[in-house]
Image 1: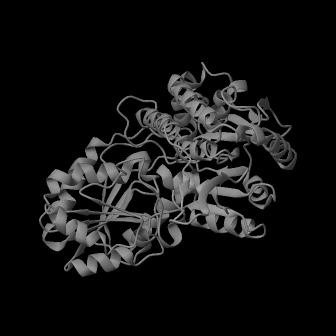
Image 2: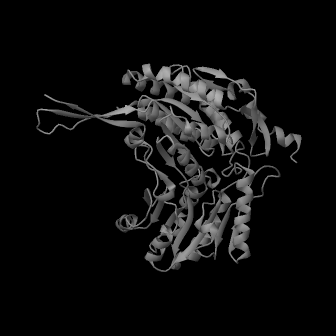
Image 3: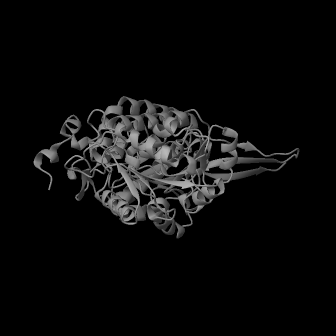
Length: 486
């Protein structure tokens, strides 16, 4: 059991933020507590450091009532909505440090990454404040007019994950608000506090009832998905979570957007220089300790470069200091949950038992918390679970291929289809290979998303619909055709 000192580590991060500010739901423009609360764990210690409201049916009913009333006025002025989004962006920027410290406490990522996440959220709000809800005149030389309009759903339910509690919330929340919807936001119970703080920060910038933040367990998500007056659901989470929400929403035939898991491949062609790209590969694989749906999770490298790449990656591992996210220089924090850590240990041990070669980080692990030593795995079969499943941690299997067709076939041989990348000195060849990969986004000589204005989403079990840019806005709207007859 962690010591009292371990329990209190990170207190300096929390001392300037009162718990009353952090752990209240926002309903109808007011903060609200519940009789029952649940503990929130600091993954760097493995111990609770705060609690959050356990919202249920009464809180959801109140949020729906306030949302219905507020949305009728909110939808009236798109100009006012854009102005409110810009104000939200500025408010998030002003409170960046408070939000980032809280993300590190409840989720574990290094403080620099947490700050970057908050900056990204502010950028998303600002980007949508500059957009207009599109309409189109489809009239084609006729005396009658045909107009295509985009109307809000009314009330939108957003269910967000623990790995990017603020960034993902912004990606869903900003377009939902611009479209004219009222929103009920349910963050993951694993990392709910930063989203609750976001609701508190934004409540005075939006009409009362337009944004409601409710923390709770799985049953609250099910109630949101089933509620007949919530006409749109947007979820980011695991494939099983998406399947369950989709089944719950089916009874009401409501619109659903799903951004689910990924098992992203990186294909390295024989003209690569492993020493030049090793750092980029690891950065794309191990950001947020590998807990990113669109991180590189497996590498297919031409057999002529196999050993050179293993050597280059192993050498770069020393750059990744492990420790609590608030400590200077840390690049790999703890895994967010004990389950994630234990699952990864089991998967890696299974590969070792089958004869895989594992290179581990030279840095020692902290005594307490859900820490895991990063690993490069070679000599592993192509159909091992560590290759075909989403590990969601700092483990990187490397597999040699002989022909590019093998690499493409192995890349596509899963139910995942979120992202991929091709690494080559000839971008034209990379572009050609991209057309053969079954996924929503392909990078050539890079893996992370390039622009927030580009659509993001997956093929197959990795999701339904798209987020970001005009595509994300369209997901938050109902299409309506208006025919005007002469």
